[in-house]
Length: 179
Ligand code: PRP
Image 1 (cartoon, rainbow, N blue to C red):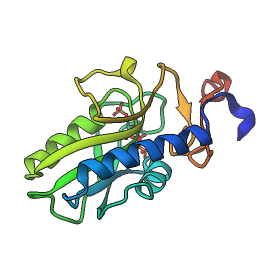
Image 2: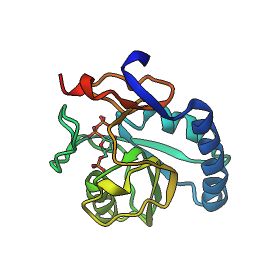
Image 3: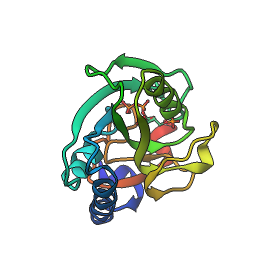
């Protein structure tokens, strides 16, 4: 897998630091709120798993399987909920956990849905923020690192379902996705 990567953008060590930093902030913010930390599958898995071990207060976990890319390198705006939450969010604080916020469409749809269902508050924590890709107005509350408009893989992010298990985030060589 490493040979397909042009350069490392966020190393494993940096991700560890990010998880620790955001963990401290989220602990302070949510210590008396018993929030639901909602992961949007599948990209959230490595970051969410790392982050929650740094949150030192009670949380509940929830998952939704949401998809927007459908195999390409750009999100389509056609957001599909493939698996819904199995717990009610009414009157609960929720923290949506993402690997990346790009166009912002996925998060916008899910935030609106959770608010509609009566969540007391909805915030977003994301490992990567790509503001240059934004097509809807959305500012995640908790950001690991801001990245340029490049196609990245690893630490949950895929190309054709591959590379999610890389322990870092890297820029994929163009020849790999233009084949
Ligand atoms: C990716 C990523 C985010 C979303 C971000 O998910 O995990 O959920 O796209 O893009 P956006 O801000 O442009 O909406 P994807 O739909 O590829 O599903 P996956 O998590 O299963 O890879």
